[in-house]
Picture 1: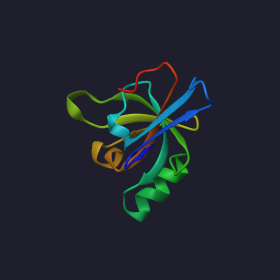
Picture 2: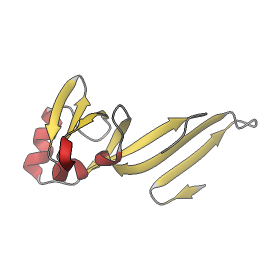
Picture 3: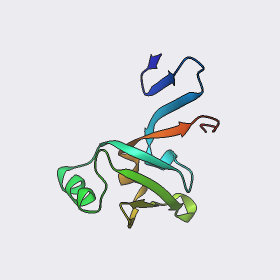
Length: 105
């Protein structure tokens, strides 16, 4: 079963091996959650700078914390922690994956 922005797959006859992916931007994660970068919507200079800081398509990113009062976010990618404005972070598309038995918020 495939939907735009989401992928659902069940493996094996028993259905015990289950994975669900949901496309979102990095600002939608909760603190401590991770995702795989699927795209970056930003100018070329910002994309190059993010790549130097280990944020590129295929990289895993973790939302470490949010700034108070709706400010930016702190991410961790490849052992590097970086603070991003909310606007830049909103342009980072990710796929959040949940394993069998976990809730996908």
